[in-house]
Image (cartoon, rainbow over all chains, first blue to last red; front, side, top):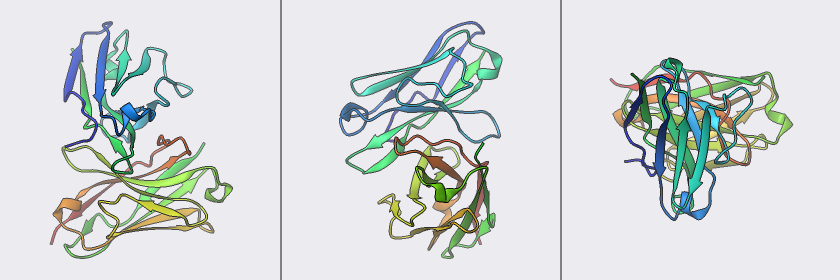
Length: 111
Length: 119
């Protein structure tokens, strides 16, 4: 059971907008620790997608955006493309466990 | 552009010690400013952060694994290494090495190496 809770799967048609939630608690996201997001394409390692809640590394399209409120964070993907089909993970810090923690991952299917 | 590559045995017997190395290219571990972490991904489950090392040798381990984990650094080889003792089938996972800044995201990651614990 992951400390950060994500939906196991989401789906959307090409061109649509999807969001992936990441729900934590007052010892991690709610304690104002930053949330980061990773994209893992099949057969590849996770790749940093969003850092510091809402910042995109160079090369990441602006179709990807992150937000945070209270004890939750969200990743939004607009203009969905077939190449976006991947697993997505959120990550933060938990001050009760004193470790970096990850969500269980969400599989995005592009219909 | 910094790249990381894991290496080590893909099969370890129960009760033995898992040993992996991560070679860094395109940048020097000794230049400082970054921590160097190990993360694992159990089949069908989430990601688990194992611990980190700084180039000075300072370490921090996940409390859930602390009694069995050791991470070391060899700056002359630009490598850092993981040892996990007394392994069981529950330690079967893909092991990744990754770089992280003080702000604590992980980027980049190595390609990952599958380690299976089995007799």
